[in-house]
Structure formats: C-alpha cells, structure tokens
Length: 167
Image 1: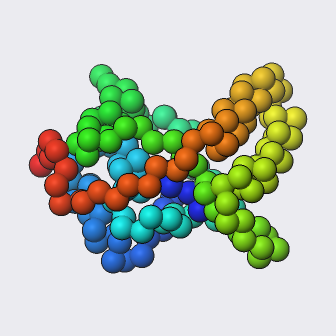
Image 2: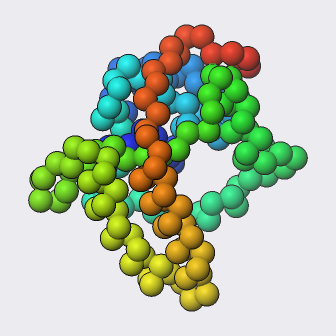
C-alpha cells in the first residue's frame, strides 16, 4: 500500500462522509480532471489517499475508445483537465508517494525510503510488449525523478468556493 497525494478516477473508494463532500465536484461539467481536484479537498495533510497494490483493476475497454460518446469530439482531455483545475485555482499536481506499507507490514514513513523501494520498477521495461522497451524505460525514469525530487503538495482547499462553477 502506498500513501499518495492523488489517485486516478477510474476505481476510487471513499469513506461515505468524504464522498458527500465531493458530490459538488460532479456538477462542474468536467468529464475528466476532478480526480486531480478531489485529492486536495481534504483536511488531512498526510495519508489522505492510498493505492492498494494487491487489488488488481482491469479496464474493460481501451482508454479513449469512448471519447466521442463522452463529449470529447471537439476537445481534448487536457482541455477539460485545465478547465477543472482552473475552477479551483490549482496547478497540475505531481503524484508522489510519501509513505507506504510493505507486504510484510513494515511501514515506510519517509519519502526517501518509498523512492528507494520504487527502484524495483527499473525491471518493468524488460516485461513490456515487444518494441516498447524504451517507452517504458522513459515512463519509469520520469516516475522515479518525480518521486525523488518533488515533495507531495499538501494543500487543503475548501470545497464550497471553487471559481467558475458551471451548473
């Protein structure tokens, strides 16, 4: 389990009280990007969100295949993400793990130890599909660079006052 400052929107789990606080986000008419906002809308400064590595999630469709049905015929995902971030005066965050719990149960409570444990990802490109080795090397190196050099942004924002609400 890795504690992280952001989670992807495809398969989140929330405490019901927190989900009730997030309901207004779904009214701002953004198809994507709200996951970048919801992680900054909590009062807890650390251990706000976690990725459970032992639970596998399988996408049932290739990402992006439903773009036209979801309203992206004349715009990009990035356009909607920028709109969503601007509604809360936010910059695009870097997802950084600041703590973790190993399968042995041992906690890693400092970002430097989490970063060192992530070095195992250097083996991942060797398991990439044929012809994608360099692409996966680049992805892993970018992740390790962000993990090592970027502090997790710890900001709590009030959910009641986003700019440019669209109803």
